[in-house]
Length: 476
Image (cartoon, rainbow, N blue to C red):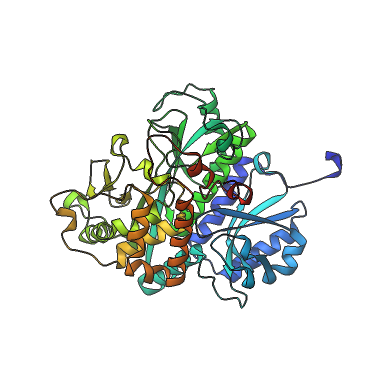
């Protein structure tokens, strides 16, 4: 078929940014779902150049799944979308495999055609049981419901922004080929800020940042990071569900841009020893009726009493939360104190080895930075756990001022044990999901050598939840 016979939607980047920012603002303004559905479906009906709608969801471990629906089919069957949940590890069992997908019409993104292909829009979905009730392992829906509950109660809104680090390696599918090659190859051996305009790492960052901007991320800054071939692209604060959605889109667009440049964007926490790993520092704050509850000009480090209580709740449950924030075998390589590892269960305005940092801020920007999160964590589960724990978790008063240093687990086995022993986390996630998540992590850990040692093992890459598939899982 020649190009002359096709007329698929291609939108200039400046127009994309305008459309995506407007859609984000509708979410922030809490425009009613019915109105958004009507508006989006009318748009899809009228816009003849759209061929398909990509509906996305995230499984329990944090893998991003995408289903493309023909536009006409989606418009006629949006209330009856189904998929095989037994094919998703951690979802339903084979004998009860059918699950439903509901479209979250507010979470709609128009995509750059040169990166994702012409004629498509992307929308997030919500996983439902056969009877239409929320599916317990859909943590995005859990986070969204929690945010709605807080807002309806007294106008409380949870905000987050993630600083996501990644590596850029030579060749496509470098992680999936690791069990054959046993190595990753750097694109650049420069360091922090040391990347010349026009080199491969800088071209990748520039291209990815343009895609981010077009998708309404509200970019702030981007740069090479400390380690060789490492990058970070920062963007603005947003409401918690939007922030978690943007984590998934950030990794998706980075991987897509890298693949088009014959490279791999890798978000393993520590793909190579001897250099800094990848983190996902997560800045959080809580507002009520427009007022930042964490700000107090006269408070210690200009943080309010409510902010310090939030921190103490996180620290009191830090050891038990470790598995949620560091959910892979490889993540425990990053918690190495020789490489600025945030593995100390304490809070500090300056010590970057602390689990929590208190950045400088003002009445608008005062926040708490949770530094111990790895970029392969389920972003919905991590952000939900931070806010649920920080606002409601059991806590020991004065824990932030205790003498002596406590440390996060240095291996996944200890983290699983501590996670399993937490009655609060069991209540927070529900007993079934709490157990499923532990079982998945145990199954992954059991396929890898127990002692990490100095060398990254093929198994920790091969059976990493963001890398593995059915073919790789059977290669043992």
